[in-house]
Image 1 (cartoon, helix red, strand yellow):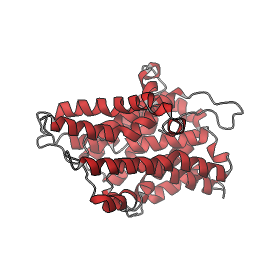
Image 2: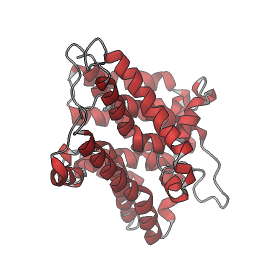
Image 3: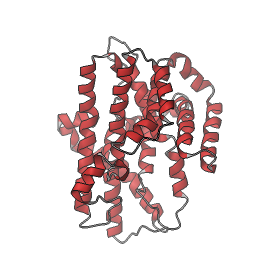
Length: 340
């Protein structure tokens, strides 16, 4: 995902890598790919998948927004001139947002003539409308994070310049949970996820005291996080507030786990973390293409073949974007920067 180089805010030298954040990004991107294995409906007989995906969506994207908020503070981004920040964020986030969205739409319109397509667009005009405006029906829903992160950064920067601190931003994030924002231009997702971006700002400004607590009390954080997931699974808390609860409780559990053994010694999450932006941008295309090829080969979307679809989708969703990045995108400097 964006903003991978971080360090101490205000540093006068190039910040050191924060391996805990890189590992967190690498593990979290696997959760993103798993969440995209099924675009809409599971095959009959595989009803167990949807409850798992529901619980996954209680915390995995909130955790990504938390990581992004943390990086914004540690990189000193909010202290830079506003015009420079807006231009940089627009290039970094909006160019991929529009580019990948249009690529997915075009790919689906072409593929519709040949194979089965999940979440198909209603023609070119309808697809463009749903892609950027009536986004409840977007044919490329996965791009929402890029626009929401852009909006979060701008809102946080603007409010901080008029004296609103991280605590005030967290309060705003809580207040937004009470609003019924329509699904227009992903503003509903901004309202539901700004809290976690603000939580990243809040923790980053206090990490000298908080991170040791995340590490020291790992068992307790995981018990609390598991309890939140259990409440969500039982339906005792609705979708919105279960995401607030699980999204906040996952922060000390997951971030703390990245800083203690054995995860703190794992290398593979660092590798995935370094490719997380490319995986995020291209995993849905890879998964959709893989599913179409399997079905064309006679491996149906059925209960019997579902495990093979899951394995193939996970492998393709990770490996194909990495290969694309290494073999193609790195040869084009401008595109290489956008997909780092």
